[in-house]
Image 1 (cartoon, rainbow, N blue to C red):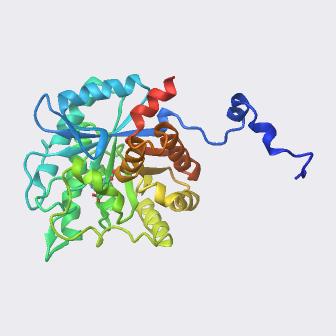
Image 2: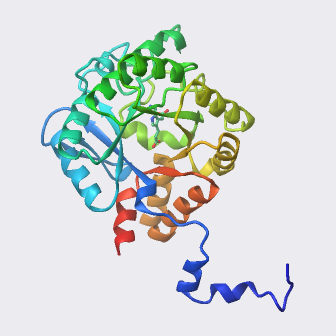
Image 3: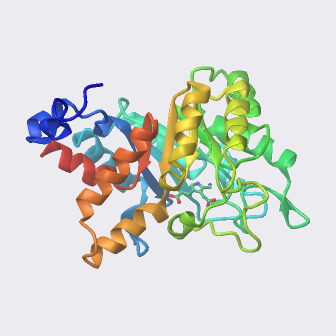
Length: 325
Ligand code: PBG
């Protein structure tokens, strides 16, 4: 490599067109997945105080949001369901006629071109807020798996293109794949939350999804933030069990993990830029401490640069608007 003065790094930084030509990582709306929260009823649109721009909506309102998203150039959504009724085992989440399946049917009827991903987890549907059925104060792994499989099949039957198990039970990807195949849904893809850390950054999400655990925490299922080799094992296991894409979550605090999971698996990697990471930027921007747009763009770019092929982002709509400009 030539040294100074024949090499001058600043030559290629002198104008925006030049910077754009040599930019290694570019972000486009087609890289982003928009999370949406669906509730029962009609005409419901409820903002969430800890998450600017995020709302709980009933299916009729969801259709408007989907139409807007498509018109902005966004093509994928991730659906979370918030039921009216919760019980010990999260029944409202896996019955055939659940809130998410109803929303998926409407979305797909209206916008067949929209890619619909559904979150598969019981925490929004259980009265105690844990991600599965509990026994002696802890989630019972093996008893939870068949319920998750039922939920995945119900979503797939409704037309979901991709199901995304976020519960972190061992062995659930294999069980979901077998159940989907057995139900004639071999084409439904699995995006597994393979690497999900026990993170402080999920706080605002639990307000939106009304899924905070009533007792204890999720540490018996979610990963310790100090571990990266374990993340590689988790990702490999899920790929072996049939995951088509693997997720790392959160994103910003785990950029090294995203990078290594991508290198190690060679599989499509999705990063979940989670609620707390989004809310942090929003809160600082509200106080005038940082530039909102630039901070969001920089965060999203860093996640792509680390190796994520796709990003679940609460900033998807504002980003798509900026991109159009
Ligand atoms: C679990 C789930 C969580 C999130 C999505 N699905 C986390 C949790 O409560 O453990 C968090 C997403 C976010 O913070 O944006 N079903």
